[in-house]
Length: 348
Image (cartoon, rainbow, N blue to C red; front, side, top):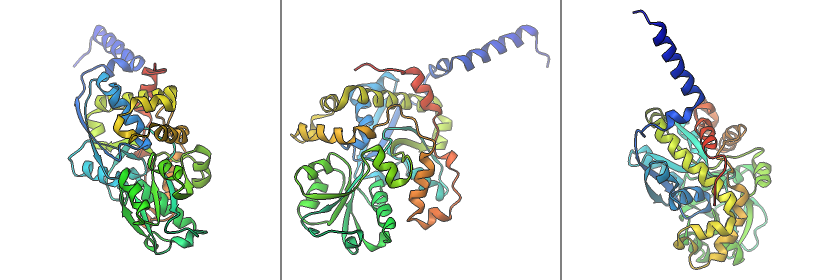
């Protein structure tokens, strides 16, 4: 079949427009307007960008109708997507590595947190004389849910000090009032959790903090590099089938990340649902302040982040050590770059 010169010029012009203005492609109708996001502990500062995007209408601005289901921990929200009852996980990046080791390909598309924001604290009630990691042998460590990123932080700490995850008992306590009660009632001896749970217990002088990943330098010192954390990740098949929907999700989270940085802790406290504050807005604001440096300023995944996460998992997980992981298939900044082009700045 011959192609006329006019047709060739028309094709060339269209191709040029697409490459020069990707927004024209993104402006097309979304493949799926209704998206179901699963999250484990939505009240936590770990998932702040998700809440802000929902509360301030950023998802709606992108044409999305979002349903958010909240679970006790990240491993539970992941199960919802693997099982097909939800589309996207708002959770820890490292789960994409775990999944690939089992032959399942999920990809992180945008960061909410550039640090894990997880703290491991020892109960001053049941372990008042704690001195070293060895004192945790045979003890109960509370985590949001077994297999979650809170478990990962605790397991990594144990491995660095010559202990195995099986040397302790991990107890799921959620990321809210149940976690606080578990410490106060002596049900657990240590707790790996997120804010505002941790700040509430620190302010009451009920835990001794032994691992803190709420600040960038501390995180880099602990893991030997950047450790990407809270994110949106989802099956590669979903990304392939719904690229415009995925771009819309990314746009909303990047906008929320930037809004948080600009609004500051006090602004965030005013924007989240009143139920998050549990009647103590000053504690919530203090928790946001402690985690503020960990918020991603632009949703971008640092290039050294995935290798750092892989090393951390391999430190205590033999299945990960023995697996052939293709890290390039666990993350992408393609959608995030376009989101930053659309929202170079945000208004508060």
